[in-house]
Image (cartoon, rainbow, N blue to C red; front, side, top):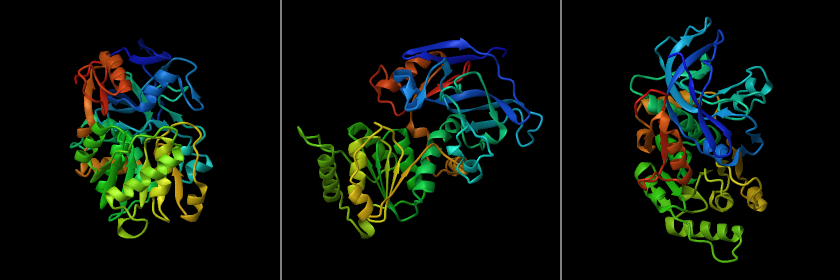
Length: 372
Protein backbone atom coordinates (compact mmCIF):
# COMPACT_ATOMS: atom_id res chain seq x y z
CA UNK A 1 0.00 0.00 0.00
CA UNK A 2 1.35 3.41 -0.94
CA UNK A 3 -1.46 5.53 0.49
CA UNK A 4 -2.36 6.46 4.03
CA UNK A 5 -6.12 7.14 4.45
CA UNK A 6 -6.80 8.87 7.77
CA UNK A 7 -9.80 10.01 9.79
CA UNK A 8 -9.30 13.73 10.36
CA UNK A 9 -11.12 16.12 12.69
CA UNK A 10 -11.18 19.54 11.03
CA UNK A 11 -13.50 21.21 13.55
CA UNK A 12 -16.54 20.61 15.73
CA UNK A 13 -18.70 17.92 14.09
CA UNK A 14 -16.45 18.11 11.03
CA UNK A 15 -14.94 14.66 10.52
CA UNK A 16 -13.54 13.68 7.12
CA UNK A 17 -11.36 11.08 5.41
CA UNK A 18 -8.10 12.42 4.03
CA UNK A 19 -4.95 11.05 2.46
CA UNK A 20 -1.92 11.74 4.65
CA UNK A 21 1.77 11.10 3.87
CA UNK A 22 3.14 7.79 5.06
CA UNK A 23 5.34 8.71 8.05
CA UNK A 24 9.10 8.38 7.78
CA UNK A 25 10.52 6.57 10.79
CA UNK A 26 13.59 7.45 12.80
CA UNK A 27 16.23 4.84 13.73
CA UNK A 28 14.54 4.06 17.07
CA UNK A 29 10.99 3.87 15.70
CA UNK A 30 8.70 1.37 14.02
CA UNK A 31 5.98 1.83 11.42
CA UNK A 32 2.75 0.04 12.30
CA UNK A 33 -0.07 -0.88 9.97
CA UNK A 34 -3.06 -0.10 12.20
CA UNK A 35 -5.62 -2.89 12.25
CA UNK A 36 -7.87 -2.20 15.24
CA UNK A 37 -8.72 1.04 17.09
CA UNK A 38 -11.11 1.62 19.95
CA UNK A 39 -13.12 4.83 20.22
CA UNK A 40 -12.44 6.70 23.45
CA UNK A 41 -14.66 9.26 25.12
CA UNK A 42 -11.93 11.84 24.61
CA UNK A 43 -12.13 11.33 20.82
CA UNK A 44 -15.86 12.02 20.97
CA UNK A 45 -15.32 15.01 23.23
CA UNK A 46 -12.96 16.62 20.71
CA UNK A 47 -15.52 15.91 17.98
CA UNK A 48 -18.36 17.54 19.91
CA UNK A 49 -16.59 20.28 21.87
CA UNK A 50 -13.33 20.85 20.02
CA UNK A 51 -11.41 20.84 23.28
CA UNK A 52 -10.77 19.13 26.59
CA UNK A 53 -9.70 21.67 29.19
CA UNK A 54 -6.48 23.28 28.01
CA UNK A 55 -6.20 21.02 24.96
CA UNK A 56 -7.87 22.82 22.04
CA UNK A 57 -8.15 21.60 18.44
CA UNK A 58 -6.71 24.48 16.43
CA UNK A 59 -5.79 22.63 13.23
CA UNK A 60 -6.92 19.40 11.52
CA UNK A 61 -6.02 16.37 13.65
CA UNK A 62 -6.20 12.63 13.09
CA UNK A 63 -8.27 11.01 15.81
CA UNK A 64 -7.67 7.74 17.68
CA UNK A 65 -5.22 6.49 20.28
CA UNK A 66 -6.41 3.01 21.33
CA UNK A 67 -4.71 0.95 18.63
CA UNK A 68 -2.91 -2.24 17.70
CA UNK A 69 -1.47 -3.44 14.43
CA UNK A 70 1.36 -5.16 12.60
CA UNK A 71 4.87 -3.79 12.17
CA UNK A 72 5.76 -3.11 8.53
CA UNK A 73 9.10 -1.32 8.99
CA UNK A 74 11.71 -1.01 11.74
CA UNK A 75 14.36 1.61 12.33
CA UNK A 76 18.07 0.83 12.11
CA UNK A 77 18.49 0.86 15.90
CA UNK A 78 15.52 -1.41 16.66
CA UNK A 79 16.57 -4.94 17.53
CA UNK A 80 13.76 -6.23 19.77
CA UNK A 81 10.99 -6.08 17.16
CA UNK A 82 10.65 -7.42 13.62
CA UNK A 83 8.48 -6.85 10.59
CA UNK A 84 5.32 -8.89 11.04
CA UNK A 85 5.17 -8.59 14.84
CA UNK A 86 1.71 -7.82 16.20
CA UNK A 87 1.91 -4.97 18.70
CA UNK A 88 -0.17 -2.81 21.01
CA UNK A 89 0.84 0.84 20.83
CA UNK A 90 1.27 2.97 23.93
CA UNK A 91 0.32 6.31 22.38
CA UNK A 92 2.34 8.78 24.44
CA UNK A 93 5.99 9.48 23.60
CA UNK A 94 7.91 11.32 26.32
CA UNK A 95 11.27 13.08 26.50
CA UNK A 96 12.86 10.49 28.88
CA UNK A 97 15.22 13.12 30.29
CA UNK A 98 13.11 15.41 32.49
CA UNK A 99 12.84 14.96 36.25
CA UNK A 100 9.39 13.39 35.98
CA UNK A 101 10.46 10.87 33.37
CA UNK A 102 13.52 9.92 35.39
CA UNK A 103 11.46 9.56 38.58
CA UNK A 104 9.13 7.01 36.99
CA UNK A 105 6.23 9.37 36.27
CA UNK A 106 6.67 9.78 32.55
CA UNK A 107 2.91 10.20 32.05
CA UNK A 108 3.37 13.67 33.57
CA UNK A 109 6.18 14.68 31.21
CA UNK A 110 5.59 18.29 30.12
CA UNK A 111 6.79 17.47 26.60
CA UNK A 112 4.69 14.36 26.01
CA UNK A 113 3.55 13.78 22.43
CA UNK A 114 0.23 11.99 22.88
CA UNK A 115 -1.77 10.65 19.96
CA UNK A 116 -4.97 12.59 19.16
CA UNK A 117 -4.26 15.23 21.78
CA UNK A 118 -3.85 18.65 20.14
CA UNK A 119 -1.72 19.38 18.24
CA UNK A 120 -0.62 15.78 17.59
CA UNK A 121 -2.19 13.35 15.16
CA UNK A 122 -3.68 10.07 16.32
CA UNK A 123 -3.73 6.50 15.11
CA UNK A 124 -6.83 6.27 12.89
CA UNK A 125 -4.77 5.90 9.74
CA UNK A 126 -3.42 3.03 7.70
CA UNK A 127 0.07 3.69 9.09
CA UNK A 128 1.32 5.15 12.36
CA UNK A 129 4.89 5.55 13.56
CA UNK A 130 5.81 4.91 17.18
CA UNK A 131 8.93 4.68 19.32
CA UNK A 132 9.96 1.03 19.41
CA UNK A 133 9.89 0.93 23.21
CA UNK A 134 6.19 1.88 23.13
CA UNK A 135 5.22 -0.96 20.78
CA UNK A 136 4.49 -4.04 22.87
CA UNK A 137 4.58 -7.42 21.16
CA UNK A 138 1.33 -9.32 21.72
CA UNK A 139 1.34 -12.99 22.75
CA UNK A 140 -0.23 -15.38 20.26
CA UNK A 141 -3.20 -15.83 22.59
CA UNK A 142 -4.08 -12.11 22.46
CA UNK A 143 -6.00 -10.75 19.47
CA UNK A 144 -5.33 -7.41 17.81
CA UNK A 145 -8.73 -6.22 19.02
CA UNK A 146 -7.67 -7.02 22.57
CA UNK A 147 -4.36 -5.33 21.82
CA UNK A 148 -6.17 -2.10 20.98
CA UNK A 149 -7.94 -2.26 24.34
CA UNK A 150 -4.68 -2.48 26.27
CA UNK A 151 -4.81 1.33 26.29
CA UNK A 152 -7.98 1.69 28.41
CA UNK A 153 -7.05 -1.40 30.42
CA UNK A 154 -3.75 0.27 31.29
CA UNK A 155 -5.76 3.19 32.69
CA UNK A 156 -7.49 0.67 34.93
CA UNK A 157 -4.19 -0.91 35.96
CA UNK A 158 -2.70 2.50 36.72
CA UNK A 159 -5.72 3.64 38.73
CA UNK A 160 -6.41 0.49 40.73
CA UNK A 161 -3.12 -1.36 41.08
CA UNK A 162 -0.64 1.49 41.12
CA UNK A 163 -2.36 4.61 42.48
CA UNK A 164 -4.99 2.75 44.52
CA UNK A 165 -2.42 0.23 45.76
CA UNK A 166 -5.24 -2.33 45.69
CA UNK A 167 -4.65 -5.72 47.26
CA UNK A 168 -6.37 -9.09 47.51
CA UNK A 169 -9.16 -9.26 50.15
CA UNK A 170 -9.91 -5.53 49.77
CA UNK A 171 -13.17 -3.98 48.57
CA UNK A 172 -13.76 -1.36 45.90
CA UNK A 173 -16.56 0.93 44.73
CA UNK A 174 -16.50 2.16 41.14
CA UNK A 175 -18.65 5.10 40.04
CA UNK A 176 -19.39 4.96 36.31
CA UNK A 177 -19.90 1.78 34.29
CA UNK A 178 -18.41 2.94 31.01
CA UNK A 179 -15.35 1.19 29.58
CA UNK A 180 -12.87 2.68 32.07
CA UNK A 181 -15.05 1.92 35.07
CA UNK A 182 -15.66 -1.63 33.89
CA UNK A 183 -11.96 -2.21 33.32
CA UNK A 184 -11.14 -0.86 36.77
CA UNK A 185 -13.56 -3.48 38.12
CA UNK A 186 -11.88 -6.15 36.00
CA UNK A 187 -8.45 -5.24 37.38
CA UNK A 188 -9.76 -5.33 40.95
CA UNK A 189 -11.30 -8.75 40.31
CA UNK A 190 -8.03 -10.03 38.87
CA UNK A 191 -6.20 -8.78 41.96
CA UNK A 192 -8.49 -10.72 44.30
CA UNK A 193 -11.10 -8.20 45.41
CA UNK A 194 -13.59 -9.54 47.93
CA UNK A 195 -16.24 -7.05 46.86
CA UNK A 196 -16.72 -4.90 43.76
CA UNK A 197 -19.61 -2.42 43.89
CA UNK A 198 -20.64 -0.75 40.64
CA UNK A 199 -22.58 2.55 40.67
CA UNK A 200 -24.30 4.15 37.70
CA UNK A 201 -27.50 6.00 36.83
CA UNK A 202 -28.21 3.77 33.81
CA UNK A 203 -29.79 0.42 34.80
CA UNK A 204 -28.61 -1.32 31.62
CA UNK A 205 -25.01 -0.48 32.41
CA UNK A 206 -25.39 -1.79 35.94
CA UNK A 207 -26.81 -5.02 34.54
CA UNK A 208 -23.79 -5.35 32.26
CA UNK A 209 -21.39 -4.60 35.12
CA UNK A 210 -22.98 -7.30 37.29
CA UNK A 211 -22.44 -9.87 34.58
CA UNK A 212 -18.92 -8.67 33.88
CA UNK A 213 -17.03 -8.10 37.14
CA UNK A 214 -19.18 -6.48 39.85
CA UNK A 215 -20.44 -8.39 42.88
CA UNK A 216 -22.97 -5.68 43.77
CA UNK A 217 -24.63 -2.75 42.03
CA UNK A 218 -26.27 0.47 43.17
CA UNK A 219 -28.66 2.73 41.28
CA UNK A 220 -28.73 6.17 42.97
CA UNK A 221 -32.21 7.56 43.64
CA UNK A 222 -33.24 10.60 41.60
CA UNK A 223 -32.33 14.03 42.89
CA UNK A 224 -35.11 15.80 44.74
CA UNK A 225 -36.26 19.25 43.72
CA UNK A 226 -33.98 22.00 45.09
CA UNK A 227 -31.74 19.41 46.74
CA UNK A 228 -28.08 20.41 46.79
CA UNK A 229 -25.42 18.12 45.41
CA UNK A 230 -23.81 17.69 48.82
CA UNK A 231 -27.15 16.79 50.38
CA UNK A 232 -27.80 14.28 47.63
CA UNK A 233 -24.31 12.84 48.12
CA UNK A 234 -24.87 12.30 51.84
CA UNK A 235 -28.19 10.66 51.10
CA UNK A 236 -26.69 8.39 48.45
CA UNK A 237 -23.84 7.31 50.71
CA UNK A 238 -26.22 6.54 53.58
CA UNK A 239 -28.51 4.51 51.34
CA UNK A 240 -25.57 2.59 49.89
CA UNK A 241 -24.38 1.74 53.38
CA UNK A 242 -27.82 0.60 54.45
CA UNK A 243 -28.72 -1.32 51.29
CA UNK A 244 -25.35 -2.98 50.77
CA UNK A 245 -24.24 -3.46 54.37
CA UNK A 246 -21.22 -1.17 54.13
CA UNK A 247 -19.54 -0.26 57.41
CA UNK A 248 -17.28 2.66 58.20
CA UNK A 249 -14.57 0.36 59.58
CA UNK A 250 -13.56 -3.27 59.48
CA UNK A 251 -14.05 -5.98 56.89
CA UNK A 252 -17.27 -4.46 55.48
CA UNK A 253 -15.70 -1.06 54.88
CA UNK A 254 -14.68 0.32 51.47
CA UNK A 255 -10.92 0.38 50.94
CA UNK A 256 -10.80 2.07 47.53
CA UNK A 257 -13.19 4.22 45.51
CA UNK A 258 -12.64 4.86 41.83
CA UNK A 259 -14.61 7.69 40.27
CA UNK A 260 -14.78 7.04 36.56
CA UNK A 261 -17.83 9.24 36.05
CA UNK A 262 -16.57 12.79 36.64
CA UNK A 263 -19.90 13.58 38.31
CA UNK A 264 -19.71 16.01 41.21
CA UNK A 265 -22.26 14.00 43.20
CA UNK A 266 -20.26 10.81 42.68
CA UNK A 267 -17.05 12.47 43.81
CA UNK A 268 -18.74 13.87 46.90
CA UNK A 269 -20.39 10.54 47.69
CA UNK A 270 -16.99 8.85 47.58
CA UNK A 271 -15.77 10.91 50.54
CA UNK A 272 -18.78 9.92 52.65
CA UNK A 273 -18.41 6.28 51.61
CA UNK A 274 -14.71 5.44 51.81
CA UNK A 275 -13.32 4.16 55.09
CA UNK A 276 -11.04 6.23 57.32
CA UNK A 277 -7.55 5.94 55.92
CA UNK A 278 -8.97 4.78 52.59
CA UNK A 279 -8.18 5.96 49.09
CA UNK A 280 -10.14 7.70 46.34
CA UNK A 281 -8.74 7.80 42.80
CA UNK A 282 -10.17 10.35 40.38
CA UNK A 283 -10.19 8.98 36.84
CA UNK A 284 -13.31 10.55 35.33
CA UNK A 285 -13.18 14.13 34.10
CA UNK A 286 -16.31 16.24 34.43
CA UNK A 287 -16.71 19.91 35.19
CA UNK A 288 -13.56 21.71 36.20
CA UNK A 289 -14.61 22.81 39.70
CA UNK A 290 -16.42 20.69 42.29
CA UNK A 291 -17.31 21.28 45.96
CA UNK A 292 -15.72 18.89 48.46
CA UNK A 293 -16.27 18.33 52.17
CA UNK A 294 -12.74 19.18 53.24
CA UNK A 295 -13.48 18.16 56.84
CA UNK A 296 -14.00 14.57 55.70
CA UNK A 297 -10.73 14.65 53.78
CA UNK A 298 -8.91 15.72 56.95
CA UNK A 299 -10.68 13.82 59.71
CA UNK A 300 -10.78 10.53 57.77
CA UNK A 301 -7.22 11.02 56.45
CA UNK A 302 -8.44 10.09 52.99
CA UNK A 303 -5.89 9.82 50.21
CA UNK A 304 -7.36 11.57 47.14
CA UNK A 305 -5.36 11.03 43.97
CA UNK A 306 -5.73 12.07 40.39
CA UNK A 307 -5.11 9.50 37.66
CA UNK A 308 -3.69 10.65 34.33
CA UNK A 309 -3.36 7.93 31.69
CA UNK A 310 -0.72 5.31 32.68
CA UNK A 311 2.94 5.00 33.49
CA UNK A 312 5.88 2.59 33.68
CA UNK A 313 4.86 -1.06 33.84
CA UNK A 314 1.15 -0.51 33.26
CA UNK A 315 1.04 -1.76 29.65
CA UNK A 316 3.06 -4.93 30.40
CA UNK A 317 0.80 -5.70 33.37
CA UNK A 318 -2.31 -5.16 31.24
CA UNK A 319 -1.01 -7.54 28.57
CA UNK A 320 -0.11 -10.12 31.21
CA UNK A 321 -3.56 -9.97 32.81
CA UNK A 322 -5.23 -10.62 29.46
CA UNK A 323 -2.81 -13.24 28.17
CA UNK A 324 -3.15 -15.22 31.40
CA UNK A 325 -6.94 -15.13 31.22
CA UNK A 326 -7.43 -12.92 34.27
CA UNK A 327 -9.14 -10.03 32.44
CA UNK A 328 -11.80 -10.42 29.75
CA UNK A 329 -11.63 -7.71 27.08
CA UNK A 330 -13.78 -9.39 24.44
CA UNK A 331 -17.02 -8.92 26.37
CA UNK A 332 -16.88 -5.13 26.49
CA UNK A 333 -16.70 -4.81 22.68
CA UNK A 334 -20.33 -4.32 21.70
CA UNK A 335 -19.90 -2.76 18.24
CA UNK A 336 -17.48 -3.24 15.35
CA UNK A 337 -17.14 -1.01 12.27
CA UNK A 338 -15.16 -0.93 9.06
CA UNK A 339 -12.87 2.05 8.55
CA UNK A 340 -15.26 3.65 6.05
CA UNK A 341 -18.04 3.34 8.67
CA UNK A 342 -16.13 5.51 11.17
CA UNK A 343 -18.75 8.27 11.14
CA UNK A 344 -21.40 5.78 12.26
CA UNK A 345 -19.06 4.45 14.93
CA UNK A 346 -18.52 7.90 16.40
CA UNK A 347 -22.21 8.76 16.27
CA UNK A 348 -23.18 5.54 18.04
CA UNK A 349 -20.56 6.17 20.72
CA UNK A 350 -21.69 9.78 21.11
CA UNK A 351 -25.35 8.96 21.73
CA UNK A 352 -24.67 5.69 23.54
CA UNK A 353 -26.46 3.33 21.15
CA UNK A 354 -26.39 2.24 17.52
CA UNK A 355 -29.23 2.61 15.03
CA UNK A 356 -30.63 -0.77 16.05
CA UNK A 357 -31.02 0.51 19.62
CA UNK A 358 -28.22 -1.61 21.08
CA UNK A 359 -26.31 0.17 23.85
CA UNK A 360 -22.65 0.93 23.22
CA UNK A 361 -19.99 -0.08 25.70
CA UNK A 362 -16.98 -0.08 23.39
CA UNK A 363 -16.84 0.37 19.62
CA UNK A 364 -13.90 -0.85 17.54
CA UNK A 365 -12.95 0.49 14.10
CA UNK A 366 -10.92 -1.73 11.78
CA UNK A 367 -8.01 -0.20 9.90
CA UNK A 368 -8.27 0.74 6.22
CA UNK A 369 -8.86 -2.43 4.21
CA UNK A 370 -9.05 -4.59 7.34
CA UNK A 371 -12.20 -6.74 7.81
CA UNK A 372 -14.29 -6.72 10.95
